[in-house]
Every structure is written in structure tokens, then in C-alpha cells.
Amino acid sequence: MRIAAAPISWGVCEVPGWGHQLAPERVLAEMAGLGLTATELGPEGFLPADPAERSALLARYGLRAVGGFVPVVLHEPGHDPLPGLREALAGFGEDMVVVLAAATGADGYDVRPELDAGGWRTLLGNLDRIRREIGLPVTLHPHVGTMVETREEVDRVLDGCEAALCLDTGHLLAGGTDPLDLARRAPGRIAHVHLKDVDDALAARVRAGVLTYTAAVRAGMYRPLGRGDVDVAGIVAALGGAGYDGWYVMEQDVVLDAEPPEGAGPVEDVRASVAALGGLG
Image: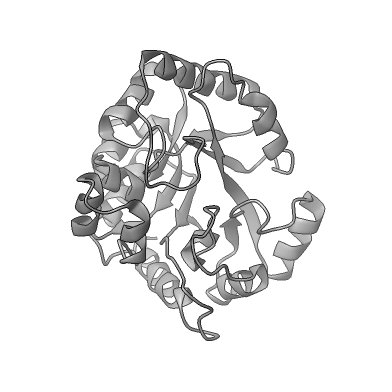
């Protein structure tokens, strides 16, 4: 397995007001201390934008960048997402995966509009344009609070365009898609994986509209791998059996209220996830 980390597991997030944001040096040092050698980039501004400067920083900790999360508005007729996307990807290396989210255009993931038929045509058309015109591996990340969240919306993407997917096991489950079922029925469309484990009782409250996404994350909806309701072993086995050879990015989204003591805090949960994945190798 090719295993990578992600800054969101340390509470580093693009959403304004998400919580206390740890310094890159601490996050990278703790990744390295766990024996990890690869990471996604994190939000804009977390790591240096200049590729050479960023690579040098990562190399100090024995790390390389494997991809990055890029929210883009894809559904608005008359808005061309390509220029802004090209600008956002200017510092991506050729071997990095673009993890695209169909952003609503608003900050955060607690509310979203519904798309009409015209919005869906625009979104699907833009996904195919991006696939053809961006010279990097591009995946669409179904994500709570974006325009592609529910099982119906995931299936609409699968049926309506040729975009590859990022299989985010947590966001899929929270949005109502069984990630193991998706891994089994559409393995050829999966080009990147975010491995999350989930407390499905909390996720069900998000699906029902009883709890906001942010409140659920703060309450511990995401768990260390093997300690929630996602069949992580089954998903890895299904993808491996189908020939998947891409990255498995461990993610456990958290909200930090303050700086945890050195050697404590999120790193302990990531350590547990690393151990769980070690048994699946």
C-alpha cells in the first residue's frame, strides 16, 4: 500500500474559523515521527506556494507531496472554472493528484444549494472539460456540503461524465453512499483514496439535518481507522483486487480548540491509524 498523511488530521483546514491551526513545522515533524514519507498539501497557505521552496521544506522531514484538495465552483452557467483552476495548480508536480471538490461558492460545509437541470449540465460538462484540458491526474471528491454529496449525486456523476473519483470513505458514508459498495461496483473510476473511519450514529444525524457537519466533526464523527463503522479492510481488499495502485491518504478531520502539548493531540490518533493500516499491508 502507498500510504500518505494529510494536514486535516491535525486540524489544518481551509474553512475560516475551523479551529486552532498548527504550524507546518509541527505537523510535518509529527508525520515524519510516525514514519510517514508522503502527504497531501493541505489548504492554500499552509505550505509554501513556490514548488522548490515547498519541496525543500518537505524534504527536511523526509516527505513528498502526492496531491492536494482544490475546491472549485463548477455548477454556475457563465462561469469558466479553468483559469482559476490552472492558477491554483501552477505549483503542482506532474505526479500529484488533483482532489477536486464541487464547491458551493460559500465558506464551510454546513449548508448548500440544490442544483437544477442547467446547473447539473454545467457541472458535468466542466468535469469533462477539466479531465481533457488539465494535464494532471484529476479526481472529483464527493464531499459533504458540496454540490456532490449524496448517493444520487455520486451516481449522477458516474453516469453523466467520465471524471475519476477520489473515494473518500468518510464523506461518502456521511452523504449516504456505502463506500465498499462503490469500490466494488465502480473500481475503474477510482483514482485516489481518502481513508476515513466514521461514527455512523453521528453521520446519520448530519444526513438527517439534525447536526451540522462542523458540529459533527467537533463531536468526533471521524475516528481512527478500525474504530468506526467503515469497513476499511474490505475497501482496501476490494480495490487491491481490482488492481488499484494509487495512494491511500489517511484522514481524520478534527477541530482543535487550542495547541495540544508536544507529542499529544492528533498525532496519537494518526499513530493508531498507521498501526491499523500496517495490519492490512
